[in-house]
Image 1 (spheres, rainbow, N blue to C red):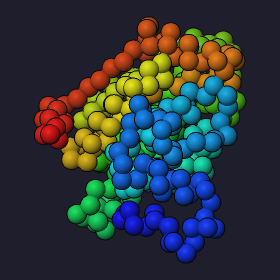
Image 2 (cartoon, rainbow, N blue to C red; image 1 turned 120 degrees about the vertical axis):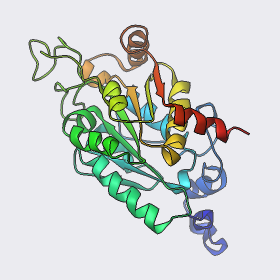
Image 3 (cartoon, one colour; image 1 turned 180 degrees about the vertical axis):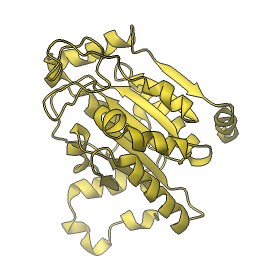
Length: 281
């Protein structure tokens, strides 16, 4: 979109909400930001209804604060905890049917390419582990098989958070949860390897234990998607409410896991590497 659309008509400045005035004068539209800038500008996501200590909310804030081109970005979400925050997101977004987010994103990306052939329009999927790896696994995989130029982000809290903490395919084996009172009986789905096998040009596994890699990897993913192919980011976002841990301890849980079985990981194809190099000044 043209940035002119965000400007306030001088005749209406005195009746516009201060929130909107701040967003126009000191927001990220037309001014690329990153994780290190958080707290210094009017953000696209500030207040939200998610739980105290919610790692998903932290990851969400970092992601939308690191968008390369928010004015030309549409985020496609799905039912889950993240969808509760979308209503307070000052950005074009779509709430899809549960698990259908990648299919919706495919259609949207196609329409935008036809409607704006000479403009960059970023379509980004952000959804939880249930929507991405369980109910929506077929739509997720087939968008990768087709090579759709979409960035997919999974908030991985390893359970169904907004419906009470039931077992999901991303739950760790032997974890005791609702619907798994004797412990989960099968291994956690290895979606990063599936993404690589399905043809994703860039795959990263990150955690709220360290926020800078979330921002850095997300920017790489969005840029690579524009020209090379689909990309996938998996973020560990432990849920204090359903894991029954104190809100202030949730970051420690993420840190402990990042030192054991949820370590940072990055895969990038040769074509994607060359493209990133070509963008350097």
